[in-house]
Length: 308
Image 1 (cartoon, rainbow, N blue to C red):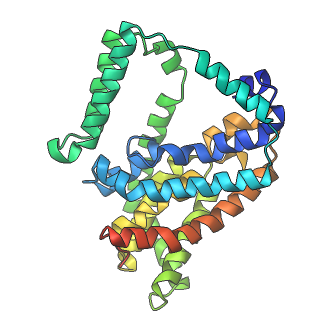
Image 2 (cartoon, rainbow, N blue to C red; image 1 turned 90 degrees about the horizontal axis):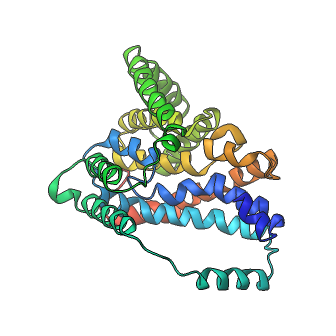
Image 3 (cartoon, rainbow, N blue to C red; image 1 turned 90 degrees about the vertical axis):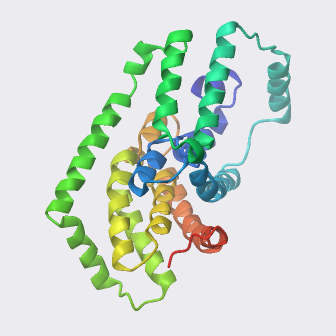
């Protein structure tokens, strides 16, 4: 991104570009079950959620939430790229003819088959990880797309260790009833006699506060989903509906640079300030609460997924 902005002399677009990349980017992928750790971990807790089912439930909320964030960036950070710059870039891209080799067709075919297996998992019953592992094996054997050195240099192994550690921690928390104690203290403040919207709004704000205190997306979703499940049981809410509201909090609401790995990666030398991120976080919090009330809950009710 930095090279692109410098090459096309778009340095004044830096803030908007990096806020989109660091904060909004996860929203584009988690609408798909296999699009990121947030969706994968959440679906793992719920069980029996197919790839297509997740997409039907989550695509509309996620993409509207993404559009809210993009609208904020367009209004707050006005475009400075000239029409000539954009037109020149489009012309340059159009004049570049792609050259396909045998390996490219292998990659396209493998990816297509993998996506088809994900979409039809309700028919064959395979776990989404199975087509992914098979595709990875085929890519390794028939192409050079898998760069082992680059793969080992990523945070994949670290994330796996974090997930395993957090799942173990949650078992300990449940064993010593710490989560139950936390839930009980919350229920003392928010009575079950309150209206449904007030209860749900309070739960979402409570989960949002916890998310703000956890500087890692994987850790946050691994902790917040069990708490949401516990609160759903306490308030006699639909566990699926309440839990499915959690990923958008974790993916789309950030208040400081260290709250997620993508944000940390783009923060340095980006021209961003903590206040820029904080302002976007406040906007996304308000947008999220309104989105849940006006769009998500009515949309899910049409699909037969209600909170009560």
